[in-house]
Image (cartoon, rainbow, N blue to C red; front, side):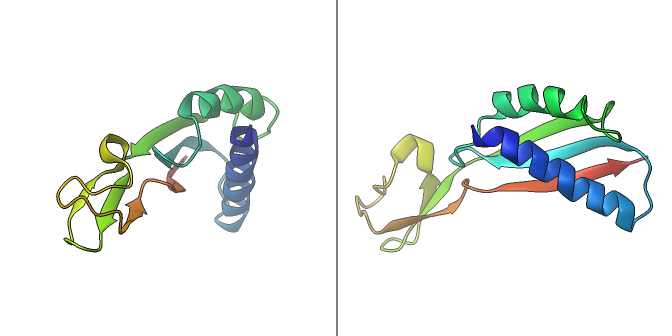
Length: 114
């Protein structure tokens, strides 16, 4: 379960930013999670509840998760389409000459400092 590692990475990163910007409290952290990233948002929430209880700065911090839709690009017809619905084969021209342009990433989008 790499979600626990992801949560500890987020905590580590935000703690470094807190020191750098002399922050004492974080109200919320917003993560963007791609729908084909392999990260399960429900697990992130469960592990967040566990991990934040063990930290000094995040006991009351809310974790917000925004899902990024997976979008694939077809190199033959130059179209884009929803990856989850059609997979690797382009629904417009039938080509398999495609690649994922978004939806497999995760990012710290926003940190609400207090």
